[in-house]
Length: 126
Image 1: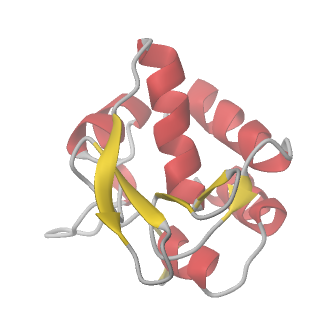
Image 2: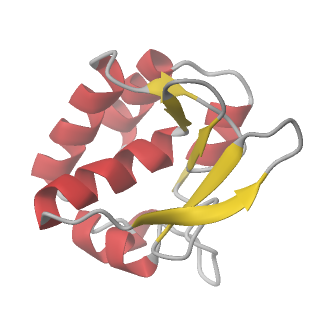
């Protein structure tokens, strides 16, 4: 993984700027959108590229809006993976699932690990 991007990602997860959500890169049900830890990485990509690649994905039950980033709703796109140099942590034949050991970050996020806990894992393991 690119060291500068890793530092930015860990900082963003710890910043309090992002509300943690589960199940999708980004969704919005209230006033503020929520992101999974991988959605935060997509936000950093957009800031670095001077882009806004988020688009409407679907309306979820309960009225929440799901967003896609470069066509992806659950995992970073290949472009984001290239930018962050994350391919070395994706299993062969993987689906852009960022894995650390036997766990993947999406599962850790959706399983109840806080952004702070995930930042600690990224910092020590990637």
